Length: 211
Image (cartoon, rainbow, N blue to C red; front, side, top):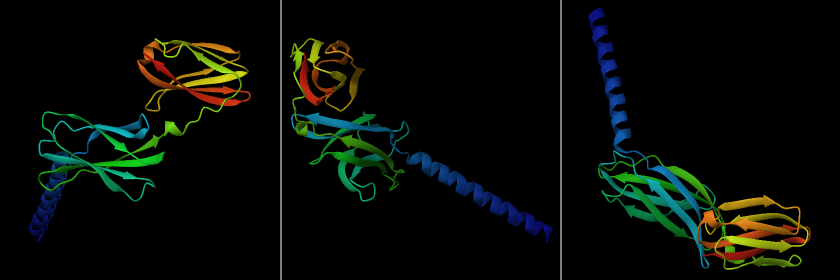
């Protein structure tokens, strides 16, 4: 009787070990994408999310990626299908939307053995800069514009200045206690920037072009 019990326990242990090994192999054969990230995208009136990710080093049977979008974090719809290219490890795509706001994105990797990865989720705040109006807040001037990088801002009762690039990243944030501020955007790179100038009378958003 004891031999039968011992044999039974040995068989149960082997089955459990096999199940754990099988699960581990499945997890490794169907890994999730890595470094899934997103940021605001804007280009001459078109706006949305710029998404990027890496495939795992051992994704040998990878077939495709599917990217999903949701406005509420619950109901998702597929917006992009990206086929795997064996020579590429880093992927990017744009998702253009019609309304600004907070969007939820999910990515899943699909494999040739009908296996799929666990989903990865991120949030992206999409900004429509075309909706930003330049409401005058006193006498405000920015010069030179276009500029090689160095600009001067003059405004009465100026309190705060924030510079934002075209993908929504804040590249400069300064508190001001006078009516003139000199900025150096040389290290920020060439391109269009939005300058949000806060004064005691309100705020004004202006565009500057760094060439």
